[in-house]
Length: 257
Image (cartoon, rainbow, N blue to C red; front, side, top):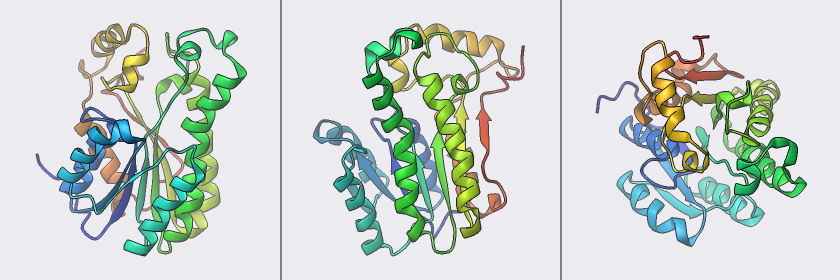
């Protein structure tokens, strides 16, 4: 793999690695190959058996559990980073969740409980991480999250995650405005359709992949390296004046009517 950027000396936290098809893993691999030192979290004991071996192949300095709904676990991660590194240069937030019934049903019919859970895990957790990262980014830094086109326009079968991603994109802009004076940049990556574990929960996703390739200006779908390379750029010093954006990585799918 050709490494396009130099991230030597950078320290980064990766949240969201579930398996080797995770967007978080694709980004973490690029960060590592570019020279960054990384910390990796996993959701629970069940996911640890998949995430830990991947983290070890990336020589992760810190590997810890982090259920974002567990305040103590999240604080422990940032405390470990403070003690081990004394700073944090970048953070990748790549987690999303909605109860299956609410995700696959109509937004009109979604439950209050399902809506709140999806919003808490997929959006508000990014705010909580930004708050914990802020004091560790004394010389500035970069916060990244993952969104999808369904937050901006209606996408068939995306359901409840559409409103949730819309909130995440707005959150990205507000965090960028508030943290800019500390030279902390906040951006969202918006990949086109890509096969991941999370995507498997979306009804008829295979059809979405085929349609995406047929419609995209470049007539192809993206892969994890495409997302990782953009993420690496946005955490590098080359993007020091880029903040508050939602950056499409979709082979030109969105520009075609």
